[in-house]
Length: 230
Image (cartoon, rainbow, N blue to C red):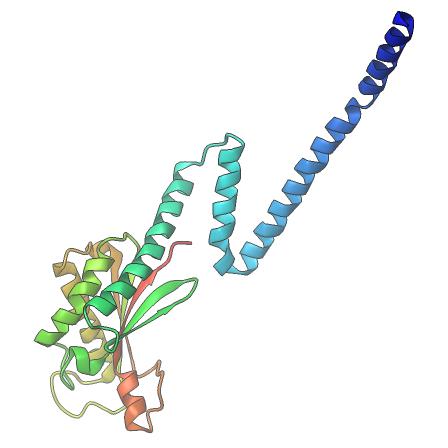
């Protein structure tokens, strides 16, 4: 009986030794599957920027799971993207709290978060000096923008009605002066000047029909864009 048991144990040991290759093979297949899934995710992220954040988050989680360390650039980029998401949520809350929902339109895509304000809220017709009520609208916007370190682009736009009198000789000049007025206000509110840029497009980028009163009103606007990190 003892001899039989010994032979059986020897046979099992031999079989187990022979099957060790299967364990290594299984590990190899698992690693290959993870590798190809990562490559597939990477290709999807490249073609669809809206998915790039989820890809980076997954990659970071994999690095942590396997004991890897993220470099400082990855950490900074992850923090910047978190701040961008927080800005968008906080801005929505601020618009509701400060009754700005009817005065400010917010649009977001993979490149930027854009706030659109019409001329009547900020300026008198043909002028580029901010009205006093305009500062109450811009102040909560500046308070949220100050919390992030991203680039901020301020664009001035007008309708196509020619300037006939006043300080400015063209719609282009007026749009640049208005963008500059908003930019200066943002600096006064504590936003670093290095993060700000002002652009005047005049009548060249309409969003409404200049043949109608409503369309021209839409075109006379200021756009404040928080540029998202790459």
